[in-house]
Image (cartoon, rainbow, N blue to C red; front, side, top):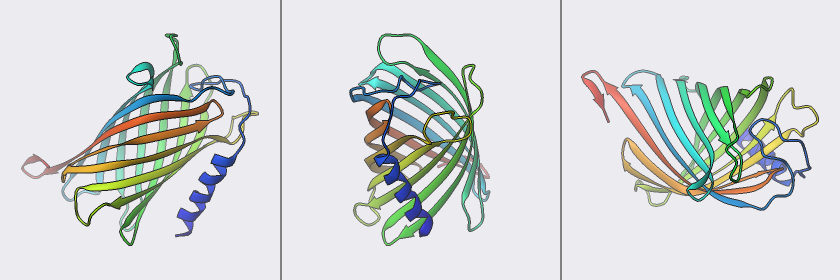
Length: 240
């Protein structure tokens, strides 16, 4: 499991990396020492696949706020085409459109168009399900030139009781700036998540937990609730 170990070490380095004042750019707030905020993050995603196909499609909508159910942060819509490589990773080409607002009473914000390519590797160690997602993003934010960003997410899911519906999950995801970052540091931010999941049916899972996103702008806490819905298309029509 050397790849999993490498990215765990990378995330730890990102958490320990010092932050310094930098000019704001794109969807980032002004860098500097700012108080921590506590907001909300809701997400709905659906996966559509055939019974015998390695291809599937993904649709996702996210809504985030800087404060609990107030102070708009971001709305994001994602579409993706997914291919499961035989005995290999799951590959995805994604397209994202988002609108991000500033903290406080301001109505100003930025619109972003984003492409991303994912490779997700999965493994099971004892009862722990591990997944490692590597993502490269090409981002166009407002009138700014093309920005490149890399992300490496490591997730662990532990069933609470055998094949029961409940599980605990945790993830760490460092964000790294690519070419064109100028004088900004390589580490953009790191995102930590921990929460509880419940499988309501074979096709429907709901998760809730806490997210901490640490960047040079300061720490952001968010209460997250996400709904994951899988739809399988059988020969006689949609099924679950």
